[in-house]
Image 1 (cartoon, rainbow, N blue to C red):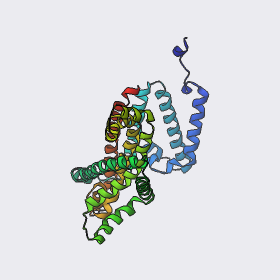
Image 2 (image 1 turned 135 degrees about the vertical axis):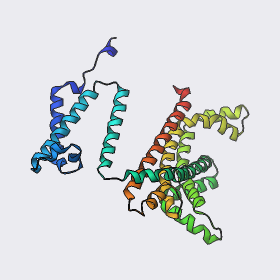
Image 3 (image 1 turned 30 degrees about the vertical axis):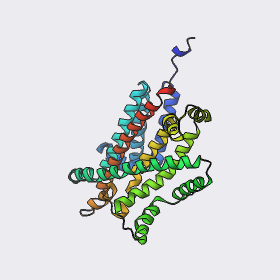
Length: 321
């Protein structure tokens, strides 16, 4: 009865574990010669004053091993949430220090980041939002067709999912942008990109919706018909609300993937984030600054979408908690 009150020993309380961890980190750091790269420059002039390569590698490896093990020892005393936040902050700091070794022009980034947000981020979000909305409708129609007893509908839905899941998205963009004009209809770059993203991710989401709808017991359909609901009413009022708990997580992942894959529409001239990252740094040969800026902006957008996805998951999961 007192099992929950027993304090479990931490691995960091074991001196043998700490010694083993220090030795392993030191050996790995020494093996990869960390004293010859940017990590040595981050550790200051004391390490760089060691002219002998072996001594410099040993100094950097030893400093790295001791720092990491002490960090592990201290974090072991924190609460779980504090551990997660601290490690996030440490990893972010390491990324910033790593990027700082590239000799970036921060003034150039500052002069371009506003335009990349107002033009690139806006276009990326605009294209992705419309595409995911259309893909949602296509997925619902495709899943309904796959689950029907109509062979004609099953054949069309299965052919659609097979083709658009089997052909690379870049080829689909080119086929739509260059192929539709052959039929006499001129399509712009933005509509072509939205159509390609919608068709491609609609095919993937069709299987997600099919799995979510199939998870609802057959008795729910029979009960809906028994109380006089039409098939459409049964789907929208009974089946979908229950299946959204399983549909939301993978659909959110698909939206994040679409947000990043929207960079592929830059090949047909859409002024989204990746297109601007390539063109803005071209005049002054500052490609790395723009690519890192685009990467950070994509990452921020993904974090925002992850937050929205988490809120939606909690909302649809309330009945099962």
